Image (cartoon, rainbow, N blue to C red):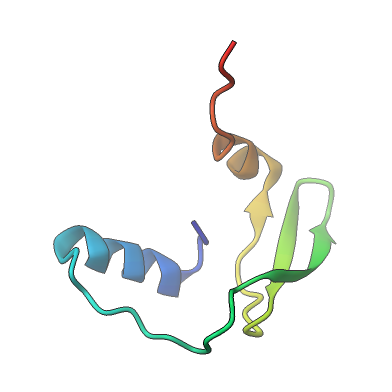
Length: 70
């Protein structure tokens, strides 16, 4: 759910073509290696593939939380 332009374009492509082949950068799972605070309103993740573009606001991250069951 990265807000980066590349990720948005990939999601749009998958909406139009669910059989699209996604590029693979490596064979290991993508993991978050570091988290950097951006002011007091957001964070930036550094991923194992070197990707660190995109700022994730606390509001955006909260919106990704699954609803509680009770």
